[in-house]
Image (cartoon, rainbow, N blue to C red):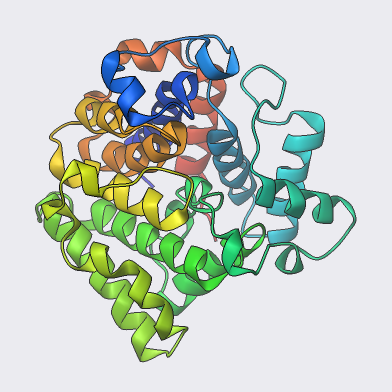
Length: 315
């Protein structure tokens, strides 16, 4: 795996995350009075500049685990280690966690098998698995579609096992794969369209909860054409996927994309994490402002993790 592809994806997501942390939960209207234009400190969670949240922590836990091969028990154990032992935290303290993820991690600690830990109800379709799924793309780069779907489903299901969350993660990973493979050959709108179409065709062909596809109509019907006031940016997985893709398609560089994601308000860190991951992959590490990279907590440890992913064959 090309080192820059790993750096751009992981720094892309965690910088988006860090930009959103200080204004998380603030409404769009409130943020419009003083838009975010640079990386800030403190704010909502009273954290220093460059602090990333559970979104990046769990992404790094997944990436770290994959360096030793694909093992659901190890992935789940690292999630538990994060929550209970502050593993892969920016300042050795957990300051944010979603309810569904927390419930799953308590089950992991009790020794329940990973695939039995995730919430299955329709009301448990927050964005907690979508926000951390991107590192799986490096493991799945040369895999067949059935294996891609299976592993995305399994990794999502550690915390979020409802089909809607799984399909959202699958679409996102398919788009990320399109970017990694074809970004020099196709415009980004086409990359998104192909990733979405491949996902939908696979689900229909295999008759996997086809009725869930109704929730993805706005994405498959060209999310680009929607106005900002039609884009919601709360914690619902569909809204996060829509908002992040809308920002990615409509804005023209990494900085513009992640700042727009943050300025949509509400679940600012996660929208910017999801948008920032694919924006990083598409535009590359050199398009991410150096001052933001330099501000990121545990930058050197993240770089070492990226080097491990790039150097190790993730079989």
